[in-house]
Image (cartoon, rainbow, N blue to C red; front, side, top):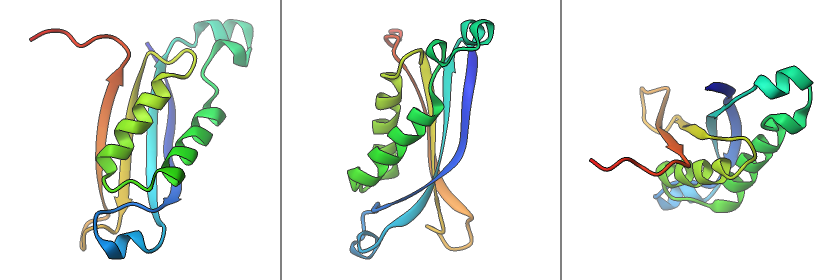
Length: 122
């Protein structure tokens, strides 16, 4: 499986559990990995045969800005489910980093992986 990578897309949004966090927008850095096959797109040189990463970025921006989430975990899950609905996406990885959330740490974050395939029974 091939991957389309979008690294550290800067998004400004309201997020956090504390009242002071919800008074103004904070910057998040969102990275996504979209698993797909790029063979057909490479052979045809056609956007119709691959994931439109501009549309994916616009979707991420819209969800983050409109959502007013409390937890970055909830944002990551919401993004993963929306990105899985895009054409040609078989699975997705989403990383959400919140710079400056903890003193002496560059950022805190969460990274998840989701696919549209049913989970295997344990």
